[in-house]
Length: 442
Image (tube, rainbow, N blue to C red):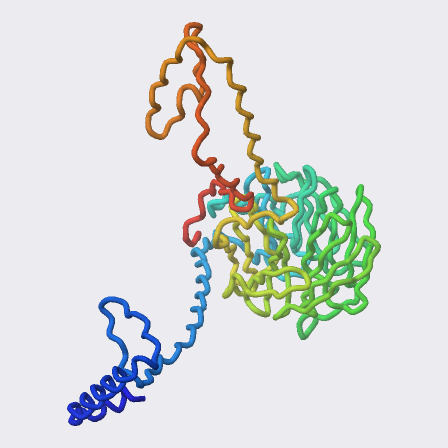
């Protein structure tokens, strides 16, 4: 406070100086009654006697800066395949053939018109064969082919009220399976044990558009036998299927916009609504998350059952039954109303495997115990040559003493070397396959 008053009255500097001098003389006349002052540090000025100097106000600690969220990785431009596709409904990656198979309705999705076909597309987005399986040819009937699945050497195709079988390598017809009472077979999923699942969306085309038929169900095919395992009494119009290893199947619905699980004994569980409806295809990524296509959102959602689903691939109209290239981390999106197939690489490379599937981190080998010191020799041991910088001494590495030399034990290091930590398995890098270049195939 006094310092502030001094600064505010520069014209009274002489009076203030005289006042301070008087206080100093008074202090000298009473030295016998006052304890000696503590010595001052050299170069520092002592504060005036009887003057209270207030310390500067304490500064409030600054809040730690909030780290900025890392920007979301950018999506690469997609490859768009045209090349004569006609209402493509389902896309499937055949890992053995390293190619994409695409079903083409080629007309109305309920018409038994015999002109559907299956296309084969290369992983670079180039058409291999437009009508690899031609529904107009004898014994290769395809009316309005939709969902595709592979089990063993057979390709299974959902086609209205039949599941048709073809050789997965040649496309040759291998028969058909009737699904009694069905009206709109839609998707096909294959479990790890070879079990086939087929959905019936239970719809037909009426005067004012699609109408329910009440046949909504999930069917199972084992050893050539067809069996209904779930009847959807709520008529949600089950569409996309994803088999699991527990003997059940995940279902997404076109009518109610739900994701739910059907157990092996036919019970519905874990139902949840997605942000938008008219759900079609469903695939699983290697980290366990799901991709689900939505006509309502014109997008592909990503999330986990019971969690939040967010759009990861936006602005794709009429996304039908999606597929997934596990080798290149590419999503196959048939755009049914655009007569196109979109090949969209996901950002950031293939997702890491789930924790339970991650290989254990390598364990560093144990350090060998030092060899015991040899018996003292009567002859002095020659001094070892100094090792080159950054290398081990010859006596510590691999050289062996000659008969005329007595080995000298290595001196203990000043500090133990710290072995580098093993690299976590989740951070191990993999060689990435070439990614498709943005292009439109016509």
